[in-house]
Length: 158
Image (cartoon, rainbow, N blue to C red; front, side, top):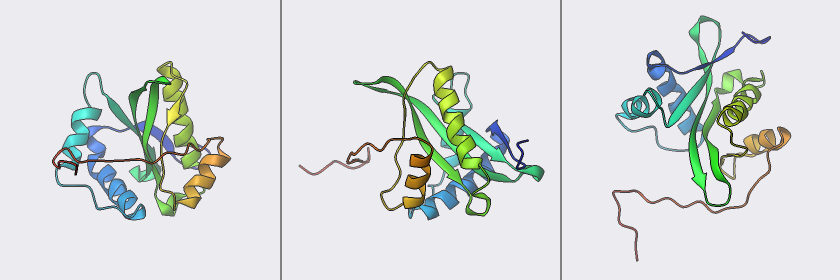
């Protein structure tokens, strides 16, 4: 346990229900639709294999309360080569300002070092000024990009 009463640990199968609650709260916070049906099954297929392509850390309070999570994967970019992609970092609003976000972000850095990569990349919505302040305070540098997304089930317009 840390000085403020939480510990970081890797997520396991037993955490999927609690993690789904955190992911739903994260989606609400980011003004997104809730995760789709089958969400936890998809996570289990990539996080809990012999050689996972993605993984998740949890911040756990006494009594097993999940206060936040960090999910990451290894990616490749032509310019930077292999890098760690920080997909999600979320701390439940009731548990913020306790150092949990700092610890989770530091864990992403440690995961990158363990995998011998020097770059960690992530994004946050432009309107999330609290997260932007937090990341800058922790030494992250913003990179201006416009992100695009197309569903595999939809043909993009021509």
